[in-house]
Length: 625
Image (tube, rainbow, N blue to C red):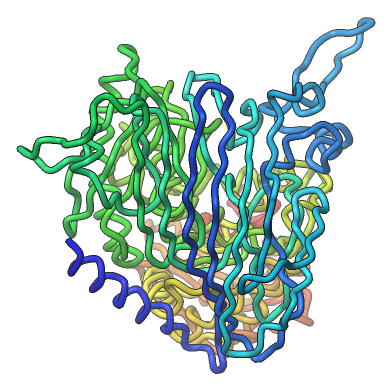
């Protein structure tokens, strides 16, 4: 066991140096934590030792820690945001009638002292000497006694006291489904410092960014509680609870009231766990001998679905391995908890009182996040569309394979396109470059991050071809796994695979609210030919696939390159294609001749695939009347 762990650790360290960008670096942390949880009052205390390696070329005079639990207090920034945003998260507010009016009340605002969350830090030291600290909401600001020089290490130690909040969002105790502990964002977590500087964002609404490192965590808790989460359990034959090796007698003092669970997690950027005294724990072996753990409440109405979920999870792992890249860890845990579904290192917390289809669907999405966020660790606070959108794309494809519907779906991403078009019509859209906390309304955030982010990839398949798109995902994963990729990195992966210039695509789709809108403006007789004129109404340029359907039953594709790409995509249709001259962005119209009479043309269709996110489909078709 020890030899396997050491080998795996060195493998992960090798992966971490894989980013091909010249001069790339990332910081590194080594956490050791010893934590004791009191399940009666939901308070815990612990000690933390953190060895921080400064791999940058900068000298650091301050560091910052996230104290996420402090968000769950009346008057916090999260509480204020709930009270001031026009469409607060329904899970975080209470709705009722007052004086004949509909009222929404922040659930955080009414938390009592024994229901709030908090993290209190004591005895903070750098290399054994007390350092100056200041708590500002959910951030601990630390002024260092001695600067951390480039390529140097320093050791931080601290003690902390925490209280698990009555569950309002993601993290907390006593969920609506009766799960005792959903321990997410629960410990003092060092903020990330990268080429952009510090990312010490307050916890207001959503999304995270963490430092790559190794975790060594000991959790002491009531012996009747089963724990699942990030990392590898080191003392499973002492713990039992379904983790022990088959045929091995569990040896611990049965008179003790607590057990200490020892987890080690190499090269992750977060540590999460869930615990309950009614969990059933199952484990199956998935592809590449990955242990798939399932921890769920012993409720008769849900047992069948949770049992049926297990082989489907193995199918999902196989799908993601084949279509993105091999999962680099040897365990993944699906834990009932939280308030919906949320991804974490080597595990997810999901609600379990669902139909079977919904249970598989939420598992597909959160498991896919292991690739798009917990291996490809983009900054989801600044580029939320990269993890949520890419995850939605690959999980929608996976669902078509592992749980296909009764009828074949022409476009598995159709709902994303419909959501995006709805957002555009509302006039509430903001650029994808908007920070996750700075969207005016939650609706705009949700559709932007999930749907418009998903379309980024689906539509990229239209731009460079589906085969090139799937090769791009594999190239992106291979080049940037276990690092912090940026939007430019997925663009460069696509350019390297296809040969196309794609800067225009990244800029228009993610940094602006420019829309795509093309129209068939005119179809006219021209001697014995037909002159077709197309019009670009939206600001965003695209290459154009144009389907012409003839009265004799034959079809033809005309391809109009986007000159900004300096490239022509392969013919993805099984019918004849004619490549026309390129369409320059500065020209609002484009005309060409078909060497057949107008009477022979039955219909002309812009983008028969439906993968181009044209915001007005009513003008995309010419039909003979």
